[in-house]
Figure (cartoon, rainbow, N blue to C red):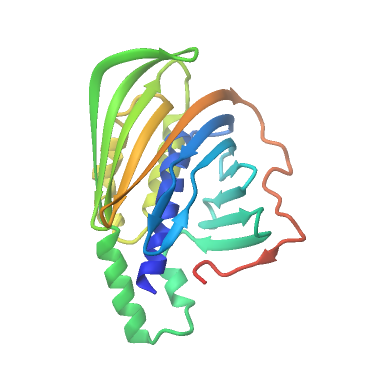
Length: 251
């Protein structure tokens, strides 16, 4: 069971890495995403090339592709994942421990032990290094940053190119990035240090490549900004398909 949940959280971590590289506020973004094929614990994930469209408002974030739709409600602290291939909807509390509390097949002692296990596994240390390397990507002038995220369950190394040509609300960015991470096990005790590191990256992420290494297995991905504009989100952008079925987060 632990291995299955770790694999699912590995995929969630990749998703969050990509989503929160541009979480700013009341804006529209279009991004080109690539995730390499991966194999772990007998389960495989084919390579993916997707176009993601995102809307960020004062209280919600939605990212949409042909395969899925992910909605984060920051006030309710709920992440909703819509899988278009399976036609399913999964609601997942941002506080991971609440998922464990709902598991009816675990004793109180097993739940407490697993929460402690996940708390240790999810502890995070973030380091950001600003470089003097610059180049133009698309229409934006960018600076290169190197970011390393060390966790007990793995390491993420990222090369990030960010631009200050696009003016954004930094406070809102911090609200989303830090607010989400703080809900994950083991994060709350060092969020101040994480926040200071994240603030070293100035401006909007235009292009990045990242490698997540879990159990010795590298998982590579990249994302590139194609379009960015400030615009009020459509009123129905957070709606869910009424014909899809609800599914458990960790079945």
